[in-house]
Image (cartoon, rainbow, N blue to C red):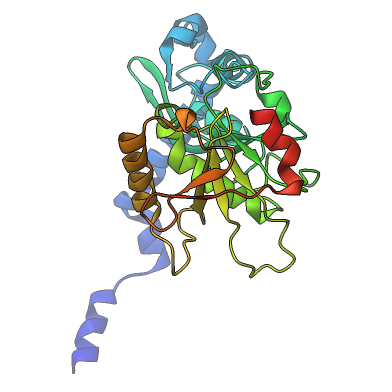
Length: 311
């Protein structure tokens, strides 16, 4: 009974009925008008609107620029490659800008690109260096918090004499950067990633605490499931702090990285700055257990030259 009743709603419907219905013709006509208008605008807009009126000047682009450590002028390059060839009236302006910025290796994420009454608004997250890897007492590469190695051509020249570059240094034996690129997300040497995690955590306080270098004596791991490298913190003049594993990789006997930092602050508050630690030749400060302790220091042959360089 119900089936027969529902079929009545379709009585009188046919293909001819649909094609001749006024609503169908209205919809088709509207689509044709919109499509034709778009095509005509694309072909003749320069005759209708002065292109210079909608061209994008540098003052009309609001963008959070990268730090001065990068060699390139991002806004100038964007203007040359994209904005000079477009106007605010272009429908493709936002996707073209996103495509260009997405290919820049040191841009980590495009948060927002919007056209507004003031011009073009761009908000970006950058892949920022947190440390400089040293090989044979020379800077070999800059790395971000994930251990991604930056192409040196992207950055301003850096050397150890430049005290304006407030980045931690990383030193380890037998480090190999030959297979590292600016595009990869994880370093081929896991020790680099561990050291970079610690650098990211300590970088905001490194200057105040006089921390300058993150060191591991561990050789490259032969197995992927090996224990995390044990890390130390050094001042410029060679005071050494035993830290232990990187944040997120603490072993069962270790304290968390927040507790370790609190222990280091406690030692400095009680004994003075790390650079003034007079027993640095024969002792280290161990905060790995969450309580500052002064322990005997042993010389490690693989980093003998590095230790001498820091004094």
